[in-house]
Each structure stands twice: as structure tokens, then as C-alpha cells.
Length: 182
Ligand SMILES: [Zn+2]
Picture (cartoon, rainbow, N blue to C red):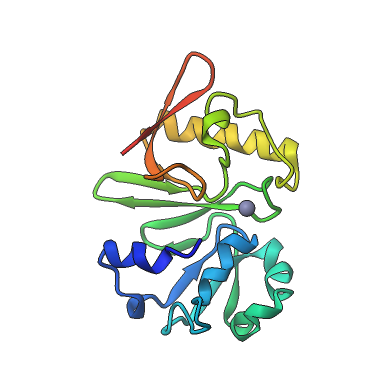
């Protein structure tokens, strides 16, 4: 939401080294970071955009992003983006909603997009869905599945709508789960 480049700079990641961007889904708050507030490209060296296959048409219907449309490539469940990054499809919040599992140095980070929107509610009660979930039943089941996966394997998780810092670990609680921020 406007702080992407600042966050990358803090992480000492140079934007001109970024040639691939992969989307968890195509909701507007997740894709318009391609364009800076002044209209320039956020990633000047961008070669390819990986878009969950079921959402390619949604991405290509976004007129403001038309200059990126021909760089979009379909992203499929289980696809490896590199030796250490794997796409895991968790449809529900949106039809192509995808998590990315990153393994490095014996640790695993799950970048889970919009699996959880309201941390104060949904860790304790993963069955709570909301209006912006395209398929609420599917979203509930997927959230539970991923929370179990993260808790049982001691994965780190990163989510778009978690409170700052949006990275931490998941543990099981008496009812539901608990988020332990880093
Ligand atoms: Zn979303």
C-alpha cells in the first residue's frame, strides 16, 4: 500500500535486480505496486510477471496495467519458480489464490498472500470468512489447511494483512491458532 520500495530498500534489495514478480492473486491492492505514485515502473528491469492461471483474464482486464499485459505468464499449482521457491494453490479468497513456499538454509517461509485478513479474529477462529473471499467455504478450508501446515512444520509465515511485522510463526492454541510475530 505504497511502502513496497521503502521496504525493499530497508531489506537492501535493489529494484533493478528484480526481473520476475509473482502474484499471490490479482486483487487491486496486490498488483498496482507495479506502478509508482509518479507513474514510473516500480521494477524497471521486469521481464516476466507470474499470474495464477485462473486469474490471467482478471489481470489483463486491468487497463491501468496494460503496459505489463504482454509480460504476464501463467503460474500453475506446484510450479517451481526456482530451486527454492514453490507455488502452492489455495483457491478460496480468489479463484487462483496462491502461496509461495521458500526454503533456504534449512528454514521455510510461507508467503501466504491474503490467507488471513483480520489477525485479531481469524487465528483464533479460522472459520471466519468475509465479503472479499470469492468462495467463503473454500477460503475457510484453505485457511485451516495452511495454518495446520505452518504450525506443524514450524514454518515462518508472511502475510499481506498481518499487523507489523507481518512475519512470524504459527502455533496451535486451545481453540484455533496463535501468531507469534518475529
Ligand atoms: Zn485479496
